[in-house]
Structures are given as structure tokens and as C-alpha cells.
Length: 199
Image (cartoon, rainbow, N blue to C red; front, side, top):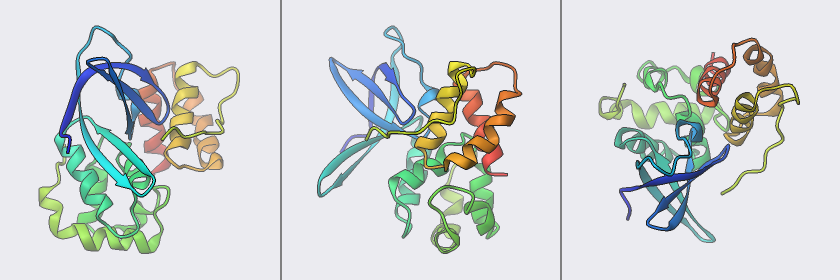
């Protein structure tokens, strides 16, 4: 029904952003909310996918059409729901995902939350023939693994990883390595964290 919204980001949380479009705030679930910054002066275009279920209507947001199309392909795989698809897409570099599908690398795919061996094999089976079409270039309550000494950017990144479905133990394991990095943005912490979790 919707292709994209254009407006101002008024809220960024670990699992969603709110986009104000002509006075209406749309809650958009996104793979990496920290790609966006709260800014009343900057107009942002976010591509959207509307999912309708028996008791819920949800909007998912994407930085471009390619990411949206990849999401649509993933949720058409048996065993992959929207939350798992967002977790898979959270890393901005989708080349690892595309290479894993092309090379029948189910082990790489099982590193994502909610993806077991059977589902990973199904992703490869369903998407391998469609790989040439892929571009290579609800409020979730989380128990954060951050501590009081962490910069807010790191705490937000850790909360976002848990919102994507990674277990607390997994996040705590990589949190130690992230704390060794020089202070950086939430988006960069999240990107480093996703790289560590999928190694």
C-alpha cells in the first residue's frame, strides 16, 4: 500500500523510529534505527513495508528500495518472520548474506537470531536462484547488558542488538570488545557489534 514516507525523524529507539509526516507520527520498525538522527530540520525518505496480521498492523522502514526488496524476499522464506528478517538486514553490508546464499553457506546464516540449520537451508534453497536480483552494494522491551560506565552510544547499540533478538550472553560477550573501541557513534558501535556476532 505504501512505498515510502518523507518527513522528519522525531524519535529514535533501539527497535524503531518515529517519522513525522505532515503532523502524523509513524512508528517504523527498522533493522538499524541509529542510521537515522532526530532532526526537525532534515527531511528524510524512508521506504516502508506494511504487514497486516490478525491482531496487528506494523510498518517496517528501510533506507532504500534494495533493502526493502531484500526484506520482502526474506519474509517469503518459510520460517523467516519480519523480526528475523530485520536482524539479518541489520548489518548495512549485505554482501556477506548474498555470498552465503550464493555459496550454500548455511553456517553463516545460522549466526543470525531465530535462524536454525533448517531455516538457513531453506533461505539458500528459496533465494539462490534469485540472488542476481539482490543488491550487493512494536516497541520491544530489552534487558540491556550495558553498565553505568558505558557511553550512551554504546548502551543504545547494545540495546538495539538485544531488540534484534540476539541473546544477552551473546551481546555481553562482544560488549567487552566494543568497550575497547574509542568512543564513536551508536551506528558505528552497532555495525562493529553485528560484525563480531556474525564472525
